[in-house]
Image (cartoon, rainbow, N blue to C red):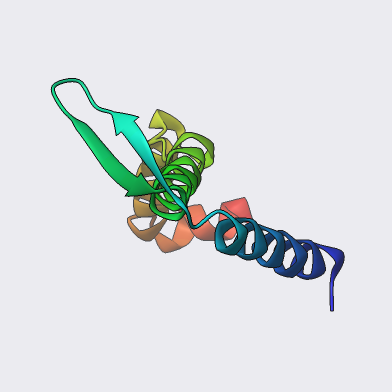
Length: 90
């Protein structure tokens, strides 16, 4: 196994243990109401949202370059060359 896989397994186990330890209900103040909610739910939701936001912020951006269009046009021009031009290029 790679180090990355081992790290993910250990990190997931630690989060799971942390969530299972903190199962008691606590009063949370939302903007307009107070509610007794398990710490497990709050920490679990916050962890999940953090992973989603981290993935969203860190994913590679897809960019379309004008260079790609130039290469495509160049490839199309190769197909329209005459036999004399192809012999000259070789």
